[in-house]
Image (cartoon, rainbow, N blue to C red; front, top):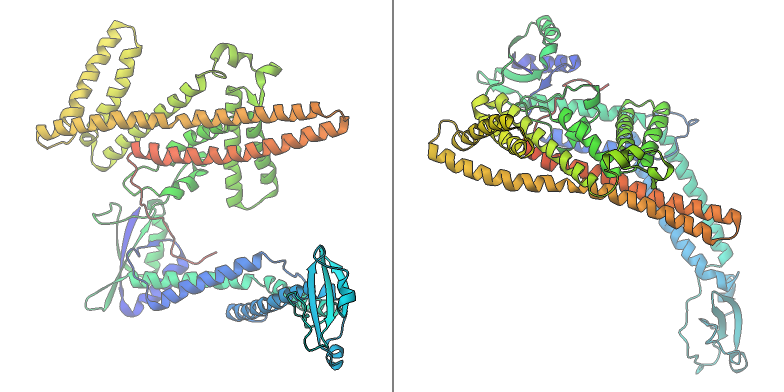
Length: 589
């Protein structure tokens, strides 16, 4: 990154910012800027616009509706009014539905006619088992209806001392038919409101464009607040960053403005250059995972290209079934043929690579949709030569992959230290890598000459690790630091490697569950003597069982590799993160 500093007269500063934003080429420094009240209000409005815009996207736009004649504020106000009216109407509809349910057993009646009779009538409802048919002979009682296990009846109360030993219920305010008619009118009115919303949804682009303008305005305000006043406020000093390979075009633009500026390719102490990741086509697919945790800071290497192959392998290992991998690959391929959105296609490309990994490890474990490939004689080589489809082979493989990634992370840490401080500060880390690999080599290699060479290198590495882990400090401090590093390395390395057993456990669990569902489906089909029904039952069990196992497998195959990357790998790579993303100060396309 190249840092630019601009010195602008106060009266010309806003115009310069406008030109800079229109050009859309540079990242303006705005860290630790406290937004003012106006900018905070804009942020709230942006959130409001986004919320309502997303709500409108969920509706069915009326393509035949006229475009909304007004600005974004008017559209939002109309939306609010309609939503409030719909909420009130919805409450009335629910209340009417309840009243209609209560009125149904009483049939059609006219409340005004009942009031004109000037007769005291009491209304009751009792469980059918509690209702005594003899009550009609003892009391002036009339049965109205029987509904939902209850008897509804009315009793004339024309005798002063008359009493009926049951709780009285209140007669609904209107008959069922009247309430039903009111309900239909309200539903029709509610439908009209829905059509109004659908009409607004057709004009949702108004909100989108207005939101873009608000974001541009907030970016402008933040950039303006981030400028430092100089020369008693008569000058403004603004700083920004630009990828070095774009500086020629940008400096031509500055020359056209006749602006005073200076630039440097070497960040000073206290500078926080923004991060713009640059990876090859394959590694670029996995950049969302890097962003999920944190961008690297400017002084360390981008870990994306280093963890991407491991993540892909770990996914396939955890999925543990070639059939599931094939499903993922084919699904992503079909969707890519239909979807044109570049961001979505990017994720589908990741899915394709992960599907390939699933198919590869399905071949290694000799498993396809819960069926052992050996049973259909497609993988004799794996069983007879490699012998890793059964027993502890996959356990050893998971530990080996973990060990390789951890050593790879330690090598990445060496490169970061060399990049930041220099080679002498990385010697102790190189020493520990050689100690670990040399110890294994001494155990494995039988050749005496090679053993002697390795032993010498091993001894020198021990001296470096214990006597030169803090260059320039007292030797006793180095020895103490070496002992402490030895303890942390031994305990940490063992724990980190054992953490990779989860790869074996998840892969084995998925394979076993797939096999179990197959056996259940076949057993269920064999137990049904009706030919067509047996096949249908078997198919349903297979679809439900493998569907559940497939979803659980995908969740585990994503979560655990991410965990291994962000914890074990990042820790051993000495990853610091907290990088600031490169954001162009410009107009939104």
